[in-house]
Image (cartoon, rainbow, N blue to C red; front, side):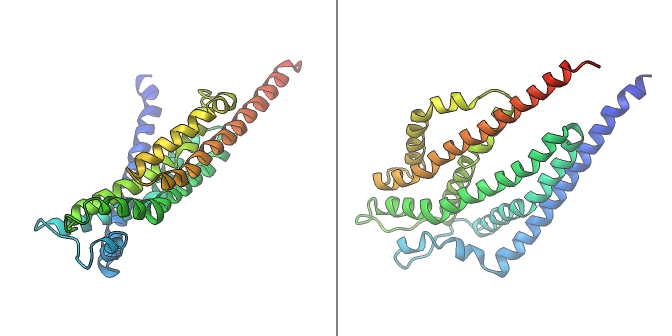
Length: 257
C-alpha cells in the first residue's frame, strides 16, 4: 500500500528530472553553438559598436590574461540560453500540461510566446536606444579632463546588465497577468493606481538612464507606462474570463439532475 501511494510522486520526480536534463542539454548545445558563432562572426567586435564612437579611435582594454576568454564565454552563455529558451519552455510546458485544465492549456502557450516577445522588445529597446544614450552621457562626464580608456570586462558587464534589466522590466504585463489569474489584483485596482504607475514609470526610466537628459527619460517613460496599460487590459480579460467561468459553474450547479 505504501509503495503504490508513493509511486505517483516518484514518477512525478522522475519526469521532472528528465525535463531538467533535456533543458540543460539544450543549454549546453546552445552555448557550444554560441561559442562557434562568437568566433566565426567576430561578434565581440560587433557588440562593441555602441561604445566605439566615444573611444576616439582607441579600443577597449583587456586588463587580465583571461579577460578575452571570459568575455567570449559569458557572451556564448547568453547566446546559448536565448537559443535554448524555446526548448526549456517546451519542457516546462510538457511537465505542467497534465496538471492544467483545458482552458488553462489554451492560455499557457500564448503567455510563453508573449513573455519571450516582450523580453526581446525590451532588450532591443535597451540595445538600440537606451545604451547609446546612456553611454553618450556617461562618457561626456569629465571628457575634457580624462582619456576614455575603458575596460572590456567593465563595458560588457555594464551593457549586459542594462539589456537584461530592460528585458526584465518588459515582463511587467506577464507578471500582472499571473497575479490576476491568482486573484491577487483586479482591473479596478490597477486602474486606481494609474497616476502612481506614471510616476513609477518615470522613476524607472530615470534609473535605467542614470543622470541622462530629462527628454530621454520622458521618451523612455512612454513605453514603460504603455506596458502598465497593457497589463490592465490583460487583467480585465482574465477577470472577465473568470466571471464567465463562475457563472457557468453556478448555472451547472443549479440545473437539477
